[in-house]
Image 1 (cartoon, rainbow, N blue to C red):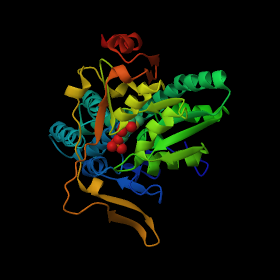
Image 2 (cartoon, rainbow, N blue to C red):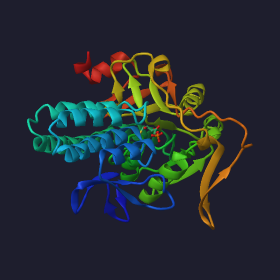
Image 3 (cartoon, rainbow, N blue to C red):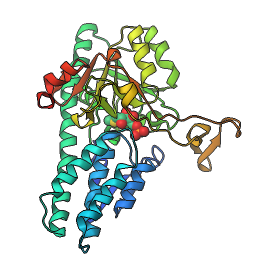
Image 4 (cartoon, rainbow, N blue to C red):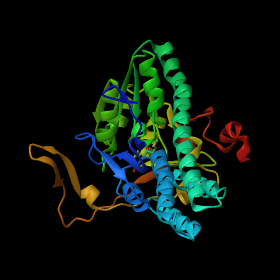
Amino acid sequence: MKINGEPTRSIRLHPDNPRVVQVIDQRQLPHQLTWMDLSSVDEAAYAIKDMVVRGAPLIGATAAMGMYLAALDAVSEPDFRDVLTRAANALGQTRPTAVNLHWALTSQMKALQQATTASEAVNCLRQNAEAILDADEEQCRQIGLHGVQLIEDIYARTGQTVNILTHCNAGWLACVDWGTATSPIYQAHDRGLPIHVWVDETRPRNQGAKLTAWELGQHGVPHTVIPDNAGGHLMQHGMVDLAIVGTDRTTRQGDVANKIGTYLKALAAHDNGVPFYVALPSSTIDWTLRDGVKEIPIEQRSQDEVKYIDGLSPHGVTSVLICPESSPAANYAFDVTPARLVTGLITERGICPASEAGLLSLFPEAA
Ligand code: MRU
């Protein structure tokens, strides 16, 4: 997507130094657009863990680039394969829910098998990381091409502005480019379809208010930030035509783990007959799991993310306590929406029912 007219991805090799990976520091948005340099696997792991970067596809892309950085550091090590295995293990422990992390690391360990020397390993891991980034961009573009048909159909039926609700940030900042849930939205806007997006603020880290609202604003997409609890009311009053969200892990039977609060939106959508779609690249499917509620690991993060909220004041970005300091808080970062509440899955190969049969109709190689 474009920032100030310049095509920009969320992650790139440093334009003057290919030994450095650059990512947008998403902790600073929407107040500041800052690039952070990553020069080692430890810095890549920190960026994922501390949510400098976040969003399932970008977590995978950063881990892939982290393996390349680890290879650069391992060139003089006689046991470079062991060093790289340790690097993959460290990166694999940064965040538990997004399966793209393990998918990308598995892909890099496979690429490593083609290398017989440490310098070949550097080349293999760089090439494969770049291929992962390119594939993610193309898959998200394809998701948009399929998903935009849903928006076109609604507009053809109603002739009115199509109101779309989204939760968290499944935008280009969460991926390499385009986004998953936002790709149909951008493509609809670019085709001149009248759309408006309800942006859930997404407590506690406010990825909707901070990131999705910023992205949509940069692209000129009309949108309104709403408190997380507003979606049900809007749906009851016919103000939402379609919900599209992303996912961090989708099971074989079509259950989806996404940012905490997604499940409640799906319940409200179900109760009000609002179509509820989940957009995902196939790297987000965990073919080894079936029952998402029982089997998907749900990250728990620091209580302070719930107890404190930050924002821009005349003194700069300030963090404030919003509850009694002594009150404990619980911070489950994701929840699971069962397949029965999902109208369909929008993938790079098309739209399918959220079921094993549906997924296998698009990905028969996983049978
Ligand atoms: O905790 P985050 O910000 O990494 O959570 C991100 C989400 O929940 C996204 O919706 C999901 O990763 C899909 S991104 C295309």
